[in-house]
Length: 167
Image 1 (tube, helix red, strand yellow):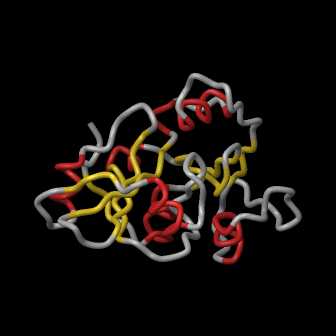
Image 2: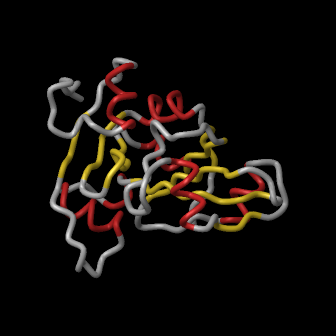
């Protein structure tokens, strides 16, 4: 994977800034987000950047046992298994966070929430299917921008844990 330079027109997000600051090899994949698209943000991204949907991951926030927000990162063609996320986090029950709470906690808008460079650190779990790929793609911090990086770097930068959390 090529490391992109700081002069990129898309380097203005905290996610891209983190990748550059840490010297992580990554690729930028900007695309024109279509607000009228019938596809979910993640499936739209996969189609736009020409990558299989199982290799593009969405970032979702949940609450486990009424505690602080937890991040779940799963392929865009699958769903977050809330029971599995709760179990991975050592809890009993998880529920999706309200979109406004997710935006406040991450500093990103829904559809552009990146697991990287969030306003506050959160416990993070990455579906273990990511480990099958040399590169995975996640939001670069805005709608219309994905970044490619190794699953190992994603786990390291998010202090994440790989776990079977998708269904």
